[in-house]
Structures are given as C-alpha cells and as structure tokens.
Image (cartoon, rainbow, N blue to C red; front, side, top):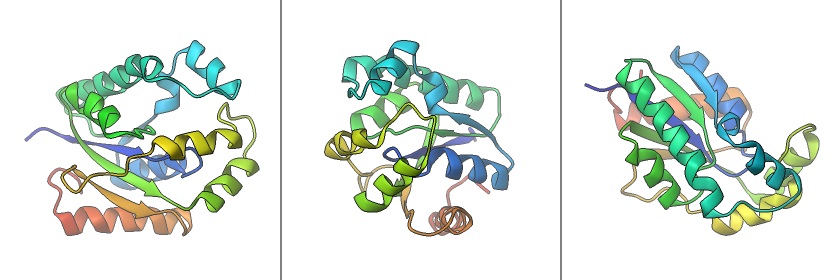
Length: 174
C-alpha cells in the first residue's frame, strides 16, 4: 500500500506550519513548509500585499505535488503545510500522483487576523487574509480529508486531527 501523505491546509494565520510540524513530530514523519516551494517572484508579490493569480500558483502547486509523490515513491511519510485554498489547487497537488490526506484548519476571521497581526517577519501580511477567505473552498464531502477547528491550543488541535484520523480509519496514518 502506498504511503499516504498529509497536507495541512488553510488560510494564512490558521497555523499550518505550526500544526503541520507538530503533527509530523507526533507521527514520526518529516515536515515541509509549502512556503519554501514558492518562487522569489511569488514571495515578492505577496510581500507587496498583492494576491497571487492562479497562473502564479500552478508551478508552486506542481512542486508540492511532485515533492509528495517523490516522498511516497521513496516510502517516506511526510506532512506538508500548503494553503490549498481551492479544490482545483488540491486537485493539482493530487494530480502529481501521491495519495494525499488533507487536514483543513478552520477558524473564524477575527482569530485568524489576530494571529497574523502578532507574527513578525512573515511575507504574508494580515491585510491579505480577506483575499484568501474570499477564494477559500473548504474540503468537499467527497475529498479525502478532515476539517479541524483551530480555536484551541496547538496540542489540542493536533490531538483532534489524530482522533479524526483514527475515527476515519485512514490507512497508513498511525
């Protein structure tokens, strides 16, 4: 059975990197941050407060999908943090050939904005949250994944994700 890879998704400020890294640690998996797959041009665009276009995102999503496929082929289990805001973005990641389980980190706008305002040194600024929320398409009922609320602390959010894996009896995720 191929290794199922995990993609922690959601808008900026939902905790993708923090939750993804902790989830990877608790599962004994490697972790990759989707931000590291962005081109310098994409980073500059976002740092300037501009929204990426789908054309900007396609190579980035392809790189993440290829990474997940390569890890799967090598028999390694990983967790990657990636916004994957639209279903078509998730489809692009899946199209690379990896079996990907999505963990959608969901929270209300006020909480997300407060988190973004507290962080420093990140290229995504709090003003970009509205544009991300405007295009967000939560996981569909037919998508391989789970939605987890981000109101609690990191440990509780990760525990909720792990409980959802067990409840759904996701093979290859222990």
